[in-house]
Length: 412
View 1 (cartoon, rainbow, N blue to C red):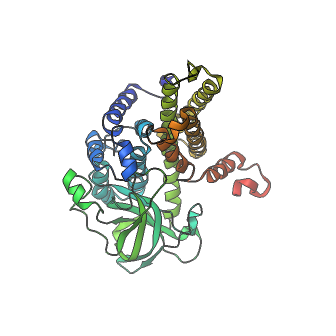
View 2 (cartoon, one colour; view 1 turned 135 degrees about the horizontal axis):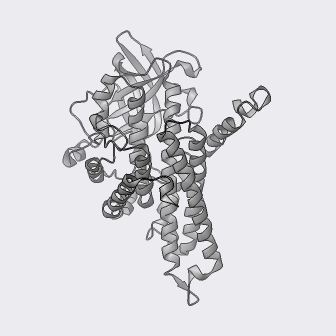
View 3 (cartoon, one colour; view 1 turned 180 degrees about the vertical axis):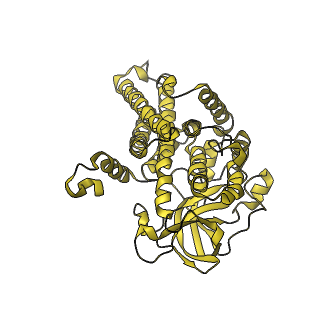
């Protein structure tokens, strides 16, 4: 790819810095963290020092003061080595922090964003529920208005940083019924589940935060991929949430969170592209060193054509990703482009990692090489932050809007 189409000098500097960090600190531990499912607190501390957990946020809010393009480059480069580290940056920055930046009051921003942007504590986003996945408008968690506070009851599931995090944004129904206009959003705080480790590394916990009574993490998920990323339930049992923790206007929670997901899809596209590119590089390197029948296997058409297909699709995915990123950075509409990038890159990650495992043969099916981990990490990219089917619905709505009788697919 001609980098000058999208990148300026400072973007190259960010990319080289993240590449060096990933090679030095992530690559040596990625396999073991995947095996043990441990959250990488030591690297969280290092990423906080480098500003990687607050890349796009202003310096006066504790961020690095860089731009959106730098943020997506960070995810992309980390995911080439380990998807769990890339996801940590994506979920923390876009899902956990951006709703407060975008929809919070000035007081809320000043109170919570510096803790998140500096990496002092981890953040999360509570939308998905046991009965409300793709149909997020089916939120069943209820927030009852008690005058100076709300009382929340319900549960969220598949929440990234659900256990390790301390600051969360979450939705709950403030108006009875099934309309999405009855859903509001809130800022909630709890204590990390890794308190002792956090104290040991010096990040992950803040004494300045007061835990919300009745708000806690539930069971940790044992996942196929993204195993060094913490995923758990969030449980609300008569959780007492002060009125000042309402995020945005009452009833705007669902709409605002969908806007957050639009941007998050660019992040998942970056994550997916990173996985694909990492697997491609591993396969290309292996194909030029592995010999069969007295030849490098890259000399065989079956292998060389597979590598060619990978290279073409990665090039296409790169343009889709950074076109969407550039639109977002310019403040232009990007819903369609984000969905396209997420759809293409997530399915590309699955295709590429599958081919990479095939090129490695039997070795690719073992933990001795990273492509089997990359293949496991790739699958959930087609599911999280809107399944491939949901992306197709979004794209169809955008391309058919105003063209169908009675709305047609535009209202699907």
